[in-house]
Length: 252
Image 1 (cartoon, rainbow, N blue to C red):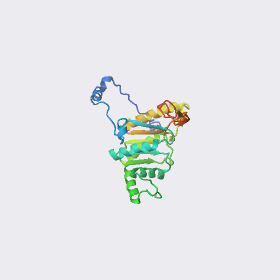
Image 2 (cartoon, one colour; image 1 turned 90 degrees about the vertical axis):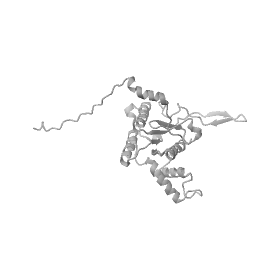
Image 3 (cartoon, rainbow, N blue to C red; image 1 turned 180 degrees about the vertical axis):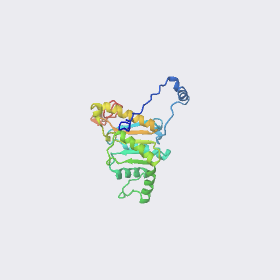
Image 4 (cartoon, helix red, strand yellow; image 1 turned 60 degrees about the horizontal axis):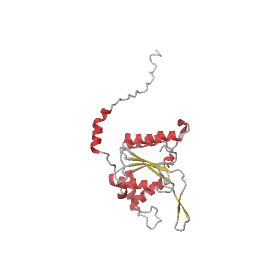
């Protein structure tokens, strides 16, 4: 009888691979032919709108040297998306400081005023409360110092937050990307193999969840550009990062 009552072993779910042919996509391809590539939402800057837009289901990478303004530019894009289109953002912002520092920076950007009360141009308390209420509806934060995250737990966090609060995010952001824990042992200790998986994961999560996923990351060290001044003396200028300048290699 003990064998009759023994629980049956759990079976792994069967994943069915649907086979598709070219003509299975005929209707959607013809629609794509008629409409062309659609734009995402604008940047909020006329000089950039001809070059850039932000589309749900896609990703944007912000590349630059330390102190170049990656975070500043990135946050401007997020604010414009919220103010113009009502977008909600999931943000991991590790470089500004602790949570009070991050929220203070967001308040400053919303009000376009310095945050601290000691500044003669600081906002009033009423203005700060107004900013906090607006930010509460558009920005959702991970405490970068409270819990370490890898890429999978990062995206799991936003999915569970959407479900728990009954909201829909339009974007996620990791600033900086290198704040994620990396387990390179799965990839033979090779960062390029890890990055290939990580960036594919970013693309997939954007598409599946209809998010726009943002990555802020650093450029590798590059030799300076040497120019001449009017007297013929050498002038050393910061190099301009290119698509091959991502820290971590050409997988980017």
